[in-house]
Length: 379
Image (cartoon, rainbow, N blue to C red; front, side):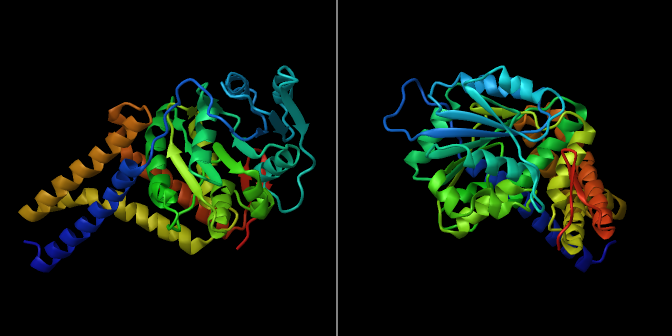
């Protein structure tokens, strides 16, 4: 029989695990949703420029531009900043001229991340009172821009961002992306961003609206030029200046398929978890947290059965129901079959491997790779 003190410690640890798991559920419940506005244009909407940073986006950009051109709000200008594409991206843009303008990205300056450089170039080349930074793979509802801009103006926001519906197709997307969404929601405390008294700050670079005067006041993308996760860093600059942030889940307004294969997922998420401001201690802490919060709890039930402890068996069974039930719900939220939620231990393994790769890369001082470019590490 397991000693009483051991049972108590394991039960207390299980309670802590459950509390942490509950945070993601609470945040998902609290996340405000933004639905498409009905017909009709609200009066006095400010002028708007759209900036898209593109690099080898020939597969996704046509649908994105066509959905922009089909908006029920008159957009003052749409600019695509091409970062040296080799796949026909420029031809996609030229085919939609003059409604869409192509800008050839100047050579990437030392110390800049490519996307921030493209966004900065695009912002300087436009004149709208508001700027929408849109990823090249986001497809929009016809009322998406009008709805988002009206919401931002109504809430007196300086930065307003939409969480898009993540579309998944391959097996690995269906396994990994529900867990990824959960991690973003929890780590960045997404719904708390809408509390002006909160320190939480985030934006989704896929769809981020900024008031130009506020954007320029915080230094624009130049202020976050070294950051691979530039959207969150930009939001933090806004928050530090006391500017108002808004974020909402808008699955009907905007959809994107972030990745299409295991290798794309690995490259994209490794870029995010590694960053250019690397810390070995932080990565080891994240790895330990993943194992302790998502893998080890699954061992409680077999341990309870092995030692014949009814309290451990009961808590272990409850942990199984809670963990797998939660991940089934997150799988459904991204449109994956519920069964993929039962594979969440494989998603955890995916992240553990990525963190191990990050630690090895950091120990060797190797640069971060993204979109065919390399960026050196900073402490």
